[in-house]
Length: 117
Image 1 (cartoon, rainbow, N blue to C red):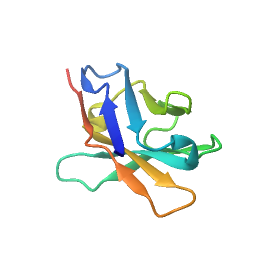
Image 2: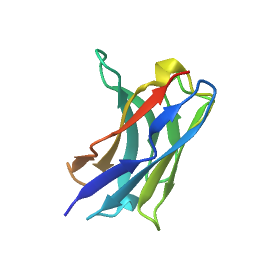
Image 3: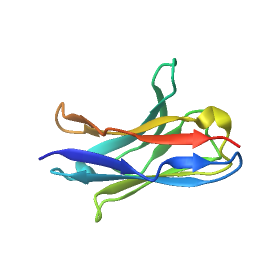
Image 4: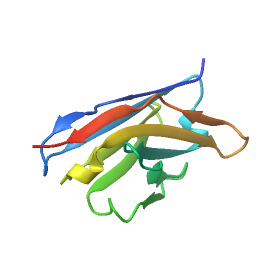
């Protein structure tokens, strides 16, 4: 069964840090580009970070220098390390996997990140 399960969200004060995890099962992430998206209430879904199967990364301008995406193919897991968090980072964060060979496109249920004092 194909599954993406996010974890690591929570409530953090401005300036704090969180590390999100996305554990995949049922397929090998080594053949997939992996993305983190976020969606805040009343806003469109936004691509936050991308990591290719080869390890190349790209980030939204709003998180450059603060967020880092990484992958551990042996653990079949992708991470998003978030530092210097701001209230505007508050959103539900979703993990996404897109195959480099097929049309496969998988999503997790999301994890809530709330940045507030």
